[in-house]
Image (cartoon, rainbow, N blue to C red):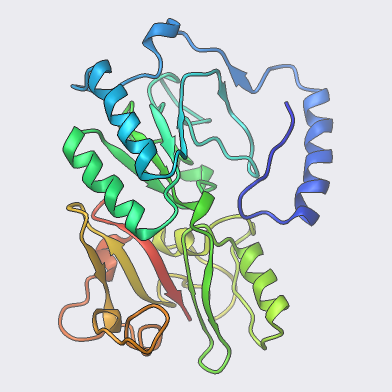
Length: 288
């Protein structure tokens, strides 16, 4: 099976990694592709309580929301590997390998599209499961915890470094920005900055912070070094934490220019409830 573009991974890494992967595949005794046990007419698997007629109608609507970026999970399941992470199922199931399987994968391209998908899910009562890059395989990767969920692959199209500030040493990123990508952006800009990374560089900067991941330098508490979030709430509304709640028409992102400089803002500090939780979908994050 030919390797395709691996989100967040530069060509200098994929070219070498794919050559190594081929050596493993040539010596493999077991296929990494699983055939489906269900009859073709029973695919994709559906979430509980959703009829196939309603699901099909909902998918037609979803395709319009995300510019056609919807893939039905109705083919054999490819376990993939770190670079080409499986977004359709759990590649390492402990029991019931056919349970943690998604019904579809969609890739929103903006915060507004994420809002629309959340409202779509509320309308059709279809569970959704967001990921950034889906490479934290130790936590189950990109597999939804509810069978038949629609996966939101935020890392595929929402992958911009929105701001890179040398004077105040912060960045503002979307979910699909990996450590490799942030490093390349810093090097390209010529700015005197550096990043603290976990063991592997293909994971999401935002996703690692939201999972309360760690690195190796004094900046290794990645959630502790975040500053400001943009979050789509379960009703589809957008919330910006900290100083991001204050509007400023003079900035590119429309919030106060101190959004990535002061974590707390005014009033309660809610950022922690969006880590390792399902209380909202984070679409932008500042990192110091």
